[in-house]
Every structure is written in structure tokens, then in C-alpha cells.
Image (cartoon, rainbow, N blue to C red; front, side, top):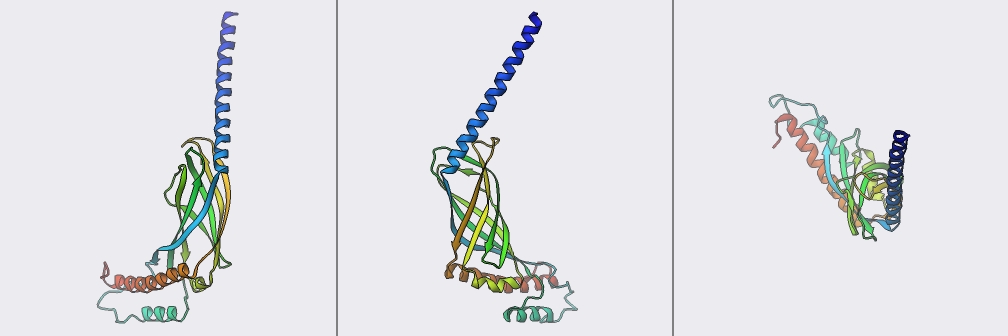
Length: 223
């Protein structure tokens, strides 16, 4: 009887502990949800981070067998100037700056971030969170990025005047805590200045990238 009572007692203790831990988890989840309900995501800015030209755009040639100027390079640049891209030239990396205002006094851990950005009706691209992992009390800066393919659609970018980011951010009260999802949908107009700056940098970067890529195929390391 004593042994059985002892076993029952230990079982009861474990059951109470499990119930307590479950209760704590639920409490934390409720608290995280309450904080998240007071958190607002907003758009700040969009800009071009970099342009990467495909390394295999032009076949490698030895210096002795190369003709200057390279006909392929000339044709590619001429077509680009006329608004023609026959094959994808590379990728343009776009940075999107967001802000998240946490109105509570508690810090939230960002456990995952999944979203897509749509540029008018031109293209929808996946975006990823770059480095932020915490939402501290007050205003937080979040930097997300995406890659735009350098194909015929870049010539439609100057006409883009609206975009939206739709996704889900999951947070917790600690690094290993239960997560709470927040669905968000951010709509925003893009100013002429923002798009003109992006397009001007894209044009210059593509031209420089094509030339450097071509020279690199002739001279290791480029110039």
C-alpha cells in the first residue's frame, strides 16, 4: 500500500507540474497575442541594393583570340538600349524597409517571416527577413529583401506605382516559446523619385556589369 501510495503521489506531482507548465505556456501565448495585437507594421522605403549579372552571359575567350569590341557585348548593349532583353541578364536585389511599432513594454522574438511582394500586376516575388530577430518596445526597423529577375519585365518598372506585401510573421515571448502568427497586408504607392532612382541605378549597374563580366571572361579578375 505504501509503495502504491508513493507511486500515486509521484504521478500526481508530475501531473501537477505538467498542468503548471501547460498553464504557463498558455499564459505566455495569450500575452504574446496581446502584445502582437498592439504591434503595427508599416512601410518605410524601397531601394536597390545591388545588381548581379550572370557569370555565364558571355563565353570565356583567350586574350589572343578575342576581338575588340566583342560583337555579343555590343549586340546585348544595343538591344538593352532599345528595350530588348532576349535572355535573363541576372538579378537585381531590392531592399524594403519596414517598421514595426510595439506598443507594449515586452520584447517579442521573431521566429519566422513569410511574405510576398507584388509590384502592381507585373510580378510577385518572395521576400525574406534579413537579420532582425527581436521586436523591442517602441519602433523597430525591419529590413526585408527580394530579387527581381533582369528580364523584359524591368522595362515595365517605371510604370509601377503601387505595391503590396502580404504575409505572416510569427513571434514568441522568448527564443523557444510558443509562437503566435500575425497576418499582415501592407499597401503603398511608390513615388516617382523612388522608382526613378531604382531604374537609373539598374541601368547603370547592368551596363557596367555586362562590360565587367565580358572583360572578366577575357582577363581573369577583370580590370
